[in-house]
Image (tube, rainbow, N blue to C red; front, side, top):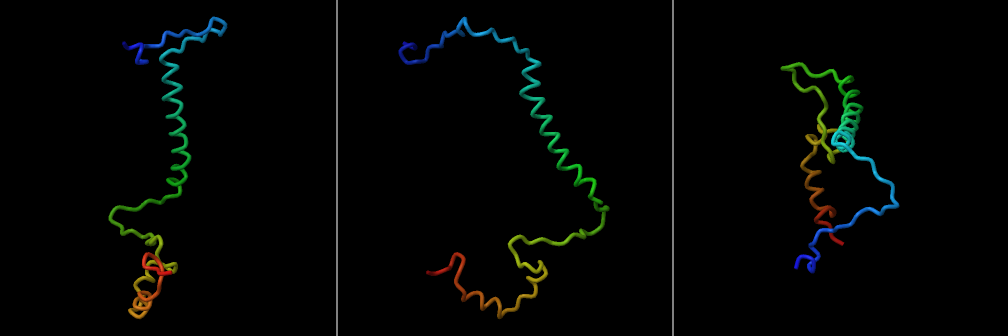
Length: 104
């Protein structure tokens, strides 16, 4: 019944005219499939992170964060420019079309 359903194992063998393939040991299998990709990963990771760590001066414990704040998609002047927005500018922007409330 299994043969009629296509679930029987295949009993094929390589043709006699083909050359015999050498035996692959377990160690060769581990080297090719695990150690080489892991080595490439570590190499790429080192190439990316080592220059950044060499340039970094670090931050001493207890010091406040001294880097600029970043607001992606915010005003182009700086993050501090958002504090300088007047109420008139806010009310004027409510009446403009665009974004999700835009009309054709």
